Image (cartoon, rainbow, N blue to C red; front, side, top):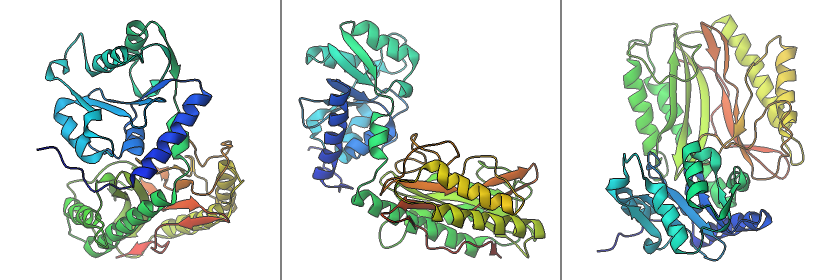
Length: 389
């Protein structure tokens, strides 16, 4: 019995639209065939979200073929057949003897395929940052008649502007993030284990809302006193206490698309310092959002935030946001002064205002937003407050 197709996140026409855009960029770069290895870009072009990038895999896009061909470990091939919009015959699983083999690996199967199908000459695009130097050299040696072209940000840049269908998924993901944060308000109490609270919050994230559950868990961070100055730890074996501050960051996920959210909690009355930082950060957040409009640049948004903070005697050392969509970050644009990326409608960003000020103090708040025709649309419906327990 053939592996059935899962319900697709997008119609076939959406994937073909994306492939057409990528092929257009290939033609501009005079590339005949492209090997996509970034997991996020593979998701974008095929719908595949299984976690198989721990071994070599690649999506081969040819100007001469409507659908791409995917190569992965044989045990992961059924997942690709299940999730990808492409014909099952275009999923090729390479054998187990290529796993932990010092001489050959899955990329050799891709190179063999390219030789067998007349694709090993001409100009071949590769996402070189997504593979090792050793693998890059393998392609150059085994495909000596080809010119290897670095297609480093070709697909990433196309992903930067979302379709309305993608925006709809990100709104669904944001609703699930809101559900997780709402559950946090219910379970964070003195005497509760951090691990138990995390379990409840993650369960709410996965269940989601409106019968549209999260399809993954991504970037869950719970940093409570005395660890409020940390940015990227999960949870500890500790308990919440009266007076604890809890910084939460996580995202809802729908078919690879993430809407991130950060909020700060206080068990008991927030300290004067926390209140002062919060007020300054919210003022900066609102100034940043007011600076968002088509034609503005990323640096304008950051400058607006930084100016509002400085008026209140505070600064944020790290950037104040980045492009987001499939996976937590898209490597295309940062909300920082000096980034001259022009904002366009349906670009999406995480306005990430986590501020780790001293070794014993930090604060978080954020919004995921899209650029509209006139400004910014934030996806979360939660208030921008310190949640007092």
